[in-house]
Amino acid sequence: MLAAPLPDNESDRLQALRDLLILDTPPEQRFDRIAAFAASEFGVPIVLVSLVDSHRQWIKSRVGTDLCETERDVSFCGHAILKPQLFVVEDAWQDARFADNPLVTGPPHVRFYAGSPLSAPDGQRVGTLCLIDTRPRGLDAVDRAILDTLRALVESELAPGAQT
Image 1 (cartoon, rainbow, N blue to C red):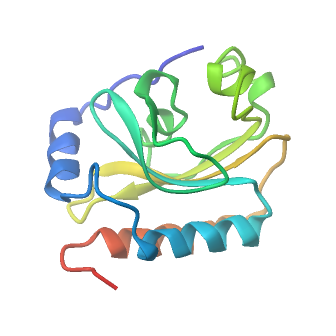
Image 2 (cartoon, helix red, strand yellow):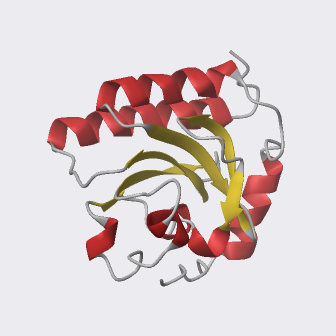
């Protein structure tokens, strides 16, 4: 397993995350609705809205799992926030970065992961909207466009004053 390196802008990224005032807050329908729609639309058993803190991946919204957080060093999302593009792992068993990851070898048995990086209003990547499946798969261009639209919806809910 290879833990993701820290982004060069880690201190600014963490400040942007703290400025959102969302860490360790209760579930909210505005995020849960998006996660539930994504699970239905993509036919995946797990969808997360997760935020990557200094030492953990904290889960704001979830479908299909009871996980509230994981260690950052085992998170797929720690890798996904490194670049602005969608991060896809079609088969974690075949990917040296993840093949022996405890989230792959044990519950929730991740095989497929697609994480669309979430940006704070200042542009810092603070987390992901991610799709997880227990079997390998991919995403076509239409799927990628839909996931990008859902990511934008989550980001709009992260914006200051967004309480729908």
